[in-house]
Image (tube, rainbow, N blue to C red; front, side):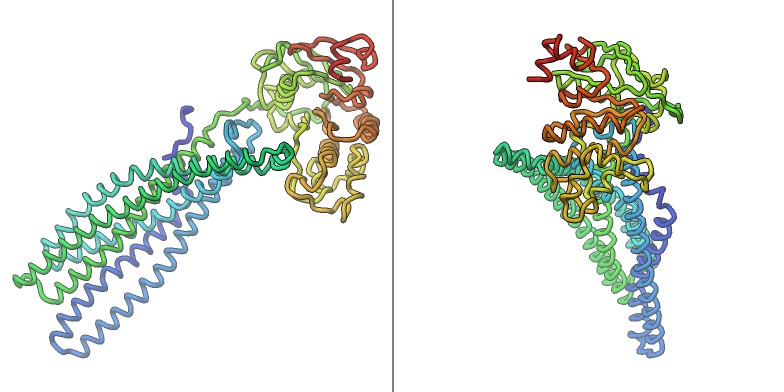
Length: 565
């Protein structure tokens, strides 16, 4: 864990501190509510001794009015306290979700490493809710503890032995309850991990449903999810058994404790040390104590589960960044010159490459891993293990990642579409929401897609654009990348699912729409490579050949094999 990074305890304390005023107010009102509840049996006992035993109607009426006042106060305090406590929990959970969202969307990346998207969603929902509930139950816990103290004071006024019994017996009971909650905490953490993994697998399978059906692999996918779901169910059942055992053990302990109070009170009444009214008050207080003890049992269980969830949230918040954030902003007038010097990362074995401002460059490689690593470097999702990449003479490591990505847009081959209209998907890449996107639509042939839809460009697409064919999705994604009008645009296989005629039209229009701005095409498409100014061939992770498309087709056998095969 990085020094000074958030831990589960830090997450819990921060969640509570953020709602301190609401928690304190709810605790005070809850204390008044519990105090009034504890006074009810005391008032009833006093009424028996001073009104019922003496036959005084006026005294009985006074005590009834006191009872009515107690119920009026405790009812209003309970409602207000519950509203504030629940609101504090919801606000704390919302704040955690915002922090998690900010961390996941941090331009430096790293939070999603080794985590499925569904798992992150589970952490941002279920775990955030459980941690937020700690702010709620803290107020309940303070009120329940106050009720125990008030009851002990009331019992001391009735009888010193009864009061001491409660005061001396409560701390050991609370300590035992905390010790009993330890297994529940461990099993709750496992339950949340398994549930998050199951959510991640489900989201992963749904995302690839069309591919799975095309491969006839539905049964294997179902078997995979069944295994994951069964693991999650087993963990949930273990956690449920642990919670049931925890609550049963604590209730047994409190039941014995309350029975002891009742027996001691009865013994004192038989000896004449306390009156009948005092005995009624003592027994009533003993029964009332069951409520605060049950509430503390619930609070203890929620704290145990909240601590487990807080640790999972802390793991995301403390996740190391994929790249270090630079401090420099990108110049407003970006020329678009890229220079790679001795770049090594994964399959890249020392690339030296100069990309001139305004150049339309093709990059060809038969190794998908090399293409993927090059994209990671140019998008600065990963920094090279060795070597240097510069934009207009400034190392990328000195630039703020978000500023860099406004200047250098890397459009991945598998870019997803959003569940909104086609035009809104394209405008998502534009610098101005009101910017015209007609040129981008025409250059990518996405205008033809819009004409085929029921409501044209205003047609709302299904999740991830699944209502479109593969080629149509590619064209809309390409239009979105072009609409961004970035000084440097890197496209990875933008037309693999497009027919050859449309691909040729896109190639010609692409050169026109990107005229004067730097464009890098990582592709093996002959149509796209034919319109480039220059083609670079990567072989074995290094630059193997450079030239125009026609020259390389005529004179480089490896190039012909990669492009024309």
